[in-house]
Image (tube, rainbow, N blue to C red):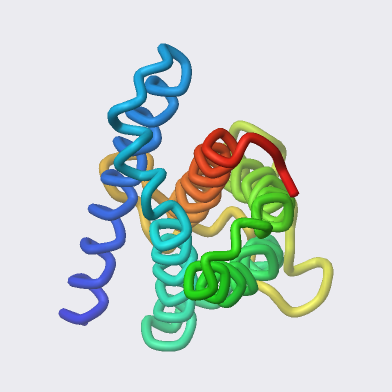
Length: 178
């Protein structure tokens, strides 16, 4: 149980750090302040890879070690995150910036699913009974709730949004999507 608590707290702290980075980067894009953007632009593929890898390992930890059974919406989010850990890692190693469009497509769809999942968990959209569509726990079940708002779907949403903003920075640097 100590391991689960430690990893959970680490993922919660990383989520908050990610949300702070998101806020700074979005503000920097809006007010056209280049200093924070330049910091991330130099290693945007590495940062994107680290986010995707952390999200992938975190979700695997929750299901395989902590024993939290993923619901249908969790599985869909995994479908859009797991390939990115591999693709962004390869893009980083090869310095291949042509990944922008592919990563954006995966991340936008994943973010929409994660956002819907979070709204479902906090009761802002009608509940769907995932278990009615085969073997799965309810999508509204919360295994994690920290600081009154951090759940697993908000962790996922934060990761997808970070990758989206990193790809936007890369697009801005490169001037076009390949």
